[in-house]
Image (cartoon, rainbow, N blue to C red):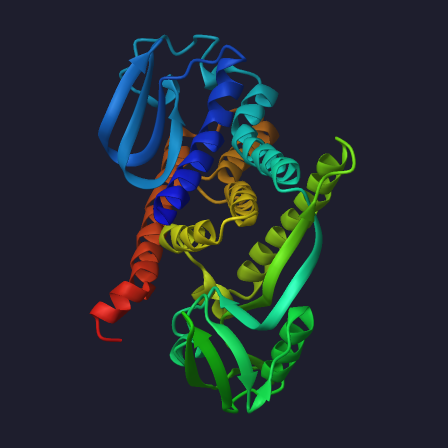
Length: 362
């Protein structure tokens, strides 16, 4: 059930993103010929008011199609309702609408969290530190740690609870590059003894996993109808800033951070785990993934919204459209790159699933 919930959330976020493009076009009277979720062969389709709505086999995103891209379209090339014949500001709005839709959805989800769950009001700490986001090939994974494990002690010293325990353990790891740490852990109620050797990255120990406090967060009823909105504004700004910083770090330190990049399989796995936890976790998961989709699509890469925006900007600077052959080559290279990267990440993430690793005898 958790996997189905995570898949539904991811699919819903893609639908919202593409719906942003679709609505921005149709509300301006721009012709649209297709609305697809996924790529490749059609699984389900239906035509409504001249638009082909389709569900396709490869769940790697989606797209809105325009008659401009169809060489066999019966619509005259000089039709004023074709996207390419509209003023640059209108076309820019169509391109940016997907990113805007994902950010608006993230904000709405955070508001809903405040209304449904309440406003965070303290944390009841329990002994130990929880492990999540274990990355394959990194020290945590090589030591045998898995997401959901609870660390109770290190080198014979017991860990307390709350953020203080996380800070203590993180500092211990940072100060121990290349040194073995004896861990006392618990998995599904069973004790474990593991040995962890942090990697040495510039004299600082790293293990390739996220550590978080063990316990439960408490919520209170909002103090008035505006408090969930104010809280959502603050959280959206915070999450958006952290996401942008994360992408910037990935681009500037690609060699170090590339192994941390995850694809749709890892996202679904994380969502399924949070679905089992219940509470406000799924609200935050949905908002965070929606923000990540917005930032990712804003990158100036071929086929992404940011890449389309770059082409539009160049057209504005030149005062005339770019050569069609150049645009086609730009978009085709982006398609090959993104599909190839998605397939690599799917294979990598699938091979890291506990069931697959057990089957492979790892």
